[in-house]
View 1: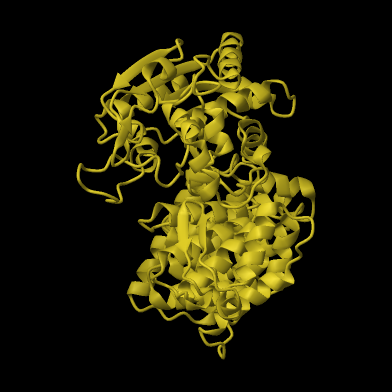
View 2: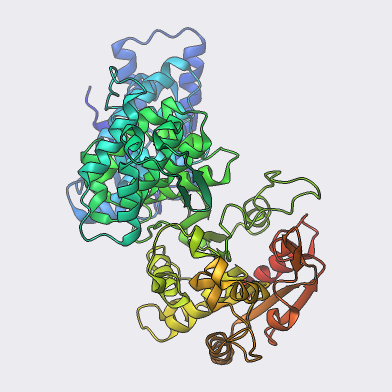
Length: 635
């Protein structure tokens, strides 16, 4: 018996996407029912009987064009015919045939997969992934056999499987690189430091250099540098004791991971980090600090950055990270979920050919593979001063309950009500004062002009501008988007980002400045206000009544842009003061500053922090925004 008949079955079902009749599918189902009945009666599978069954399986598919199609197996045209347009319903029928006891007995799935892997083509791998994911096998023994089958797959097929919903995680248990069995948990700290020492310090931005040099001084060597220090990273603070060597080991490791994350932003350092064994170290760290959410978040961010470099993909799969990333997709922690989605999307070069998610760009929906034609628009969320993607867009907390961990409403509500959108969230560093800034950055890197260029380049790599775009912004995030669109309009490389912008929702954006900046300016000798705070100043000085020239010009230019482009606008304003200290509370963005004078404006009885945090699906802060998006998509 040869394998030509089963392979002809595979080819005929797939190549016949536009030619095969439902009669053939009916014949397949009839044969499967017939064989299932034989098995139930205690049928003994002898070699002759198996051959006869295989012959029956091939005979039921005798069609005039089959032999002709099979002659072209070595040609590019045949490949295009075979894999071009295969409907999902046909894939399900084929997977049903592969899942049958007869096909499993004949090892048809194994032969089919081997057949597919002869073609080094991304479309073929995508099709193979769909077929494998559709297999319905409930027998434990056969599931184990299937697990072995999947383990033999190309790594790119495994990545595709990890992104598909409903897949048994056991099928992703590939771990071809063994962990260091003799490495004690205490060695992780020294291994992390050794990794940092292997990375070059020349040609780096000031932040990365600053992070690295200070990280190297931690741990046991820190006893030589006894001084009180306070560090701040991405909104999370690490306060050190007088002797850094007295820090808990977990906190030291967290500090090293943050420094490595700074390096992972540098493209040339990613491959070097993997070659130096970073994946082995972080795999052991995950096992050692399994219950530490902060450690896992840092590792998730690091993996997302490493996945931007295609040369690291095989190592990441063979390290056995796919089951871990897939488990994070079901995490209740929004940050961990977002890191997993971003990492898997960056790994999936077969499907996401021209879309990568740089640091600070998070894909919230859809989290797996999807048809481009099913996405009507990109909805991009941009936070404001001292905000972040994992806190700004949460539902409003109950009164009197701090840090209750409410759900992210774009993830919990919006994508359910409007599934035909791609949802992205942006993250960028901001601070009120230079005293608590992440590192000694150059002032120009904190300005709106600099951030605009940096963010629009990242968004372009994520494919923003190829389809309609809707922006949802809070506070200073609105100023950033206004600057971004004005810059994009003047640059042919990014112009589509402006041309395809259909609408913007402003939550308390200080178009003419914020009172917060004025307070910071008055206390400038104490607070050392940051560049972003200075840009928000409503007045050129404490004694002046004139608006900031920068904000006035930005506002005027944006209103002109809206006249040139059909952009719909919706704005929300705050009317309640926010408590800044035990003795000071104020309305940070007055209605005069929040109201653009164009589009609908809704003043609400909430403060600046809660203006973008709806309390329920019937809250105006949600219903107005959701309807706004729906109306734009419907046009």
